[in-house]
Image (cartoon, rainbow, N blue to C red; front, side):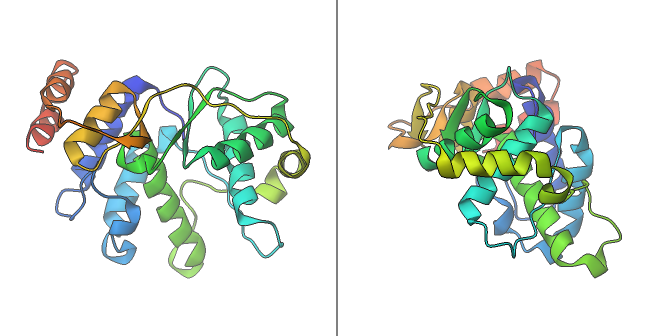
Length: 239
């Protein structure tokens, strides 16, 4: 998925609103904390409300490809489709994931965009949480085709629709020894909802040393109010 920092409040607001009545809270939960069959309306609402940010492809497996390399190629193909030259790519994981993604995208485009790693990014960034929810939604639809007349958002099979990108990306992961670098963005491990909210607000990435002090969420609440998200501000103030 692709979004601006200025879109994050709208995304967060839509997730909070859709989660009304479900045991789900941003900065605390991720998609697998819900049973999909009991939460279909929640997933469908989140995806529908944020369709403008989402793009997807699918890999159906059974071709002997290494799963970690497949994930990197899938991510690289999506990044190429979204156009990320002037964006920061946030990768959910550690430096190994950055290495694989960096080589895959270089195999496609000849260069690597700015990127950062964030451990359990869906607990820190609303955009990553949206991607996590969309991925679970798509996975269920693909695994249960009889229950779905069509997959939403559309998810063409990567090796069919983007076969011209798949080979160069996968081969670069296997054959390249070119070092890949990430942006020097501070990482902090946050164990509570308020500390994760503050990491997001300050632009920190998950990982590294633990956050030492609990910070107030008041500046975040005030920011949401200034931007016109009164209901979201109220929800955040109750954290």
